[in-house]
Length: 141
View 1 (cartoon, one colour):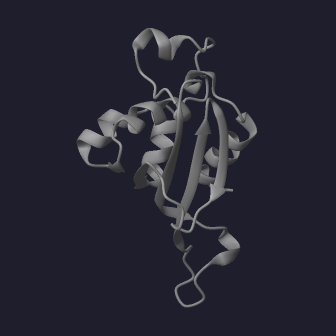
View 2: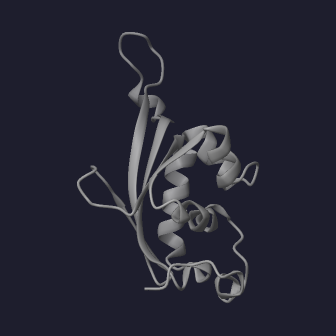
């Protein structure tokens, strides 16, 4: 299983993100260059095929729902990056803002959601749901 698929599986298992308690939004993630299963090698070249993955993450007062997305659902923001950039975001080697400034991550729609989405990347979220209230961030519904 690729790191990209692991990330979305982990979000599904997490189910709730306390730091997004005040957020109600949908974010589309478009991840490019995702390595497929080695069994799906290109018959002509013998190399692994790279694919793209699109997932819709719905945040409803902290409750996370992840679904496969064919682009038909309207989202408040679309975040696009490569699979390797997503891995760096998840592992803490870079931040969403740094990726955005470097052009390694693009956003369409509400740019505030990029800042809020940064909380999804952390594998060790902060223990208190009050963090969004103290920083003034969050999109009250």
